[in-house]
Image (cartoon, rainbow, N blue to C red):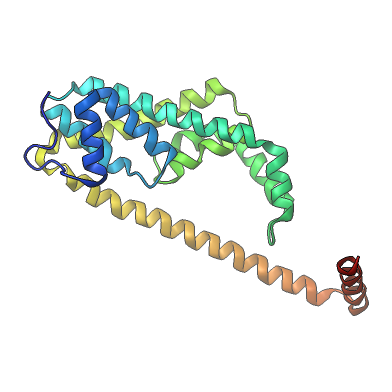
Length: 234
C-alpha cells in the first residue's frame, strides 16, 4: 500500500493519526476515522476527508472505496449519537429545561414543533455544517425520528459533504491541505454566528425577565422572598 505520508503528506497530529489508520486498514480506516469525527466534533472532517482523497490519488485505496467507507463511517457515527438522544429521551430534556435559568419549556415546545415539521431537512443540511453535523443527530434521537428517515437523509447529506472533500483531496494531490485552510474560515464563521445567536438569546431573556420583575407588585415580591426564606430554614 502506498503511504499517504509520502511527499507532502502529514507526519503527526490528527492527520498523522488518520494516515496511520488508512495505512493499516485501507478504506475502512478512513471510515473509522470519520465515525470517530462524528462522535468527537473537534476531530476535523476537513482534514480527514481530503486526506482520504489524497491517499486514493496515491493508490492507497480506490476513490469509490474512499467515498463508500467515509459515508458509512458518517452514518455509523450519526446513529451512535441518535441512540444517545433516544436514551436521554424527551422527558429528561424537558425536566432539564425546566430547571435552567432563562430557558422556558415553551421554547422547547416550539423547537419540537419546528423539528416535527422540518426535521428531515434539518438532518440533511445539518450534515453539511461544521459542529452541527454531529449535534443534529441528538435531537433527532430525542424526538424519535423514524430511523429509516434519519438514515436516508444522513446518508444523502453525508455523501454530498464527503464527496466534495474527498474529490478535492484527490484532485489537489500534494496540495490537499488547501482544503483545510478554506474550510477553517467557514467553520470559524459558523461558530461565531452560533455564539452571537446565543448571546442575543440570553440578552433578550435577561431584559424580558427584568421587565417582568419590574411590573410585579411589591407585595408579591416580598411574599415570594419570605417563602424562599422559609423553605431555606426548613
